[in-house]
Length: 620
Image 1 (cartoon, rainbow, N blue to C red):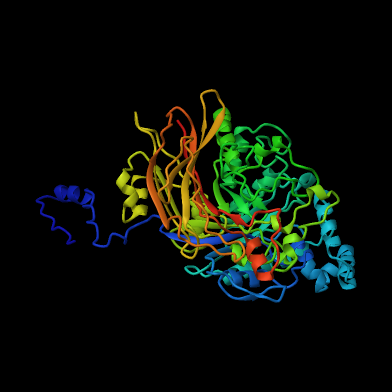
Image 2: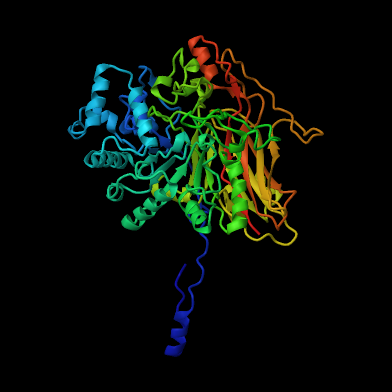
């Protein structure tokens, strides 16, 4: 556009004209040039362990460290401990190597007789155990007992510094903005009496900031509030960014989402504010079970109970009870958050949902036909489906390898594949979880969507233009209007068709009690809900013996605009999507076909994989 010529007779007139705002720029011809919303779907794992973790090394991971883990995630072929080559079907876009902060790098250092460790009594003794060929799970038992006793058996600050500097430098070396994002992080392993309170700590920054600190571990404190204080201090000291991601709430003994702090006191506003600030996401699916919901919490939900671990706590020290379950699963926690918001004015559980593997092999595999197990002892073999995960004194609490889930991954809607953009998407909760398949999922909420928007050629532009994406909050409801949700789901291009898309709603009633409901909003094939309102099953094409299925049922894509028929503008609520695939073989069926074995009857050989979006919230 040409600059207009100034035509004025006096200095004052010209000055007034110059002070006027410039004419609005005409939109360019390209509709994509000025778009500022998230258009790139990126896949990653924020919870992977290598031989730098004490338990991974004790389980047998002797050779796959952070460097090999990053190479594998980027698409390279790696040789596993069982001597088989392994490679992902498609590279990941980002990875957090999150080794346990407690005893970080100690076992590889002991094996190498690192001089700093050989100065310690424990280092010398553990080196003797390893060199004698005795089962290294003895070291793991000592490690676990020390954690529970809040005891540091090594005590070498110099060694901790040397390993942390290596970890952060390796992440920097593999970070390639635009191609692959490598993040520094670690796991804070608080586990009082075997109850899981673990968090993955993730940094957005490079070594110039992360090396200004050392990991804050459970040896420093078992209290999550102390961890948040560390994160706050890190950001103030370095100008960087960090967050914490809780996981395996399903084996927390009812502690993870109990509305009480570590001392047992009810949440207050300050606690809720800090928790929401530092923990914007929760890992709801991984190898040690799925934590979306439990049948006891959601008795009318026919899809509740996917890959459930509900026998014991993480330490396998005590059995779980029905009273624990509302405080162990994401959906019930989201409901508790609504009640806490009404009580204290802040929602402590306004979190997005992600998946990650928690593999201790250094191999971020989550596909059923490419599952390399939880630990190196669980890599593909004739025996793994029948092996125990860890042998414990009480056999009723012991979990088998066959009860491991080949799960999960995190999907991020970002503007670019950079640390900065991925971290920003995580903080605004524009992320979702899958149990492994790379389904593409969009979810927007607003009050102005129309039915035709579901068939828009550019669903994203329509969604951002008329509403808020997953992870967002709806504004005030216009009089007489209910929220409308724009839903779009596409199957993994090399995966199974979709059975259905569901909206899961939770709300706070006028009686002060929370409730939930699952709505089928889009589905495949010519099915109709029955008299009970339930949609008939999609059917199955699975041949268990050959571990195959056919995409002759289901749909490649499902989309709709759904209006909440039960909306009450006076009630707080949340909504999230659950996308269900058609039945496919479980990893145990692929094992049985390959090894000519019989699948363990402890778990079915067929499953329906799924994705969970982050919620959208409404408050009056």
